[in-house]
Length: 255
Image (cartoon, rainbow, N blue to C red; front, side, top):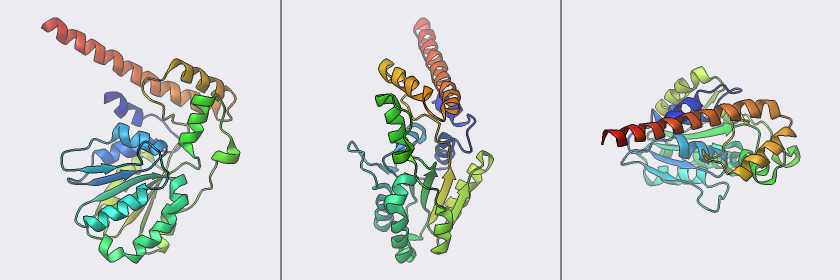
């Protein structure tokens, strides 16, 4: 867990997606309902959220279906109007159905405004999970033709609908952004502009995946940024693993 906390504070351009979830985790209200979607956001959701008894969580599941995170959250709020509901979704899925679902939120705004209802959109202009899968599993660099998605003003769109739109691209202000979202009197779209080059790879990557990722990164237009951020992240995880093994050895010795 210590490695995850440190990784969230690594430098990013502009926001580290891990920091976004880390700052939310510290502020999670009791009995919150959380949802997420397919994509790299699910990695950060699973790695950094610390759920407590009484909370509930839903995600896309083994099929990695894109699009359920936003309607899950709307349905949860309609079913449990007094409970805080927070959805973490990527910009790809939000363009697929989330923007249209905000019109649903406007339609039922009176029924959805009893306590927090927050849609946190990770804006990185990339279908990020597939981009990294192509690197790790296929050894191929990012293919802009299929992976790039346009920058959309998600927070401004929410404001146009009479909802609360908040945009954050400053790591020093992400905590304040969450505080404002959690205190809002209407449903919120919190748009966070995050770094697409932070690798959502598992803590223990297989050798073949590591080789293919390295091969892909060498040909990638963002190779310098990816290499620096990826190496730093894996070093933190390695250090924490060593500490963990050392701690267990000490405990064994005391026994």
